Image (tube, rainbow, N blue to C red; front, side, top):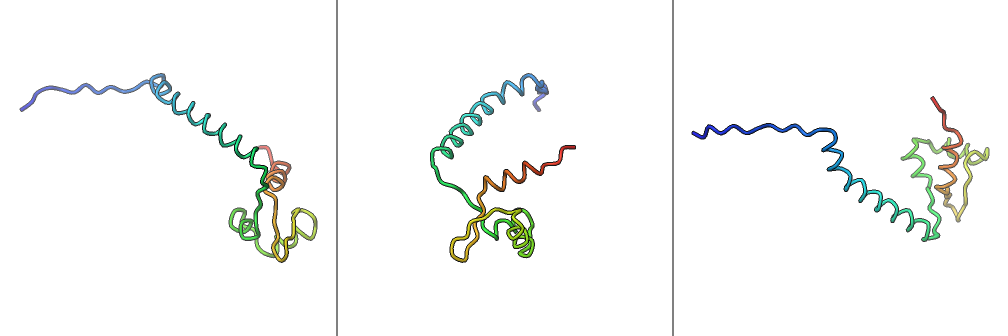
Length: 99
């Protein structure tokens, strides 16, 4: 039998932070790169009705009511309604409730 005892080493918070620093740095670089690409594309991103229902849990009737009352700015392309993501984000920010 082997009588050697393994010493249990518990990492300190400082050691864990040192290990995570390169990961956070890399994630920041990825985030910066992605943000630059989004700005440079010049393409506007849109939600469709099914996106609003899935993401925000809105019903068809609520979406129609919000469009008709001007709460939900939209673009109509044939029979398709499009909602600019940036505008929806702006509405969400404007209606944010601080606790």
